Image (cartoon, rainbow, N blue to C red; front, top):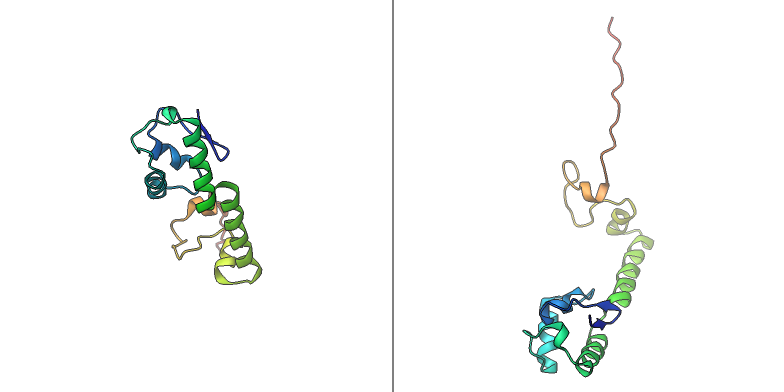
Length: 125
């Protein structure tokens, strides 16, 4: 199992699909990198030679922010929004949807499980 940038790449998958297991590398990026390096996209990951693995790792690391660096960058952007108290930052703080989705009936993933509120008893005369 080849290891690229701290991620184990699956052996049996085509290399263009296997590269997408790296955080920050999608299908288009993987295809672009393989084309630039002259590696056939239909090769299996187990068939890569050591020098090809090294060149892939170097090229991806130089060209694109991936894995830890990308996660850190995204987290810094979110923290900046929170610090300046902009609307998106406030939505992040309250764990609500940030991009304008409705919250009355949906957004259970973001809000978590329902918190039921008990009804007050109405006294009748």
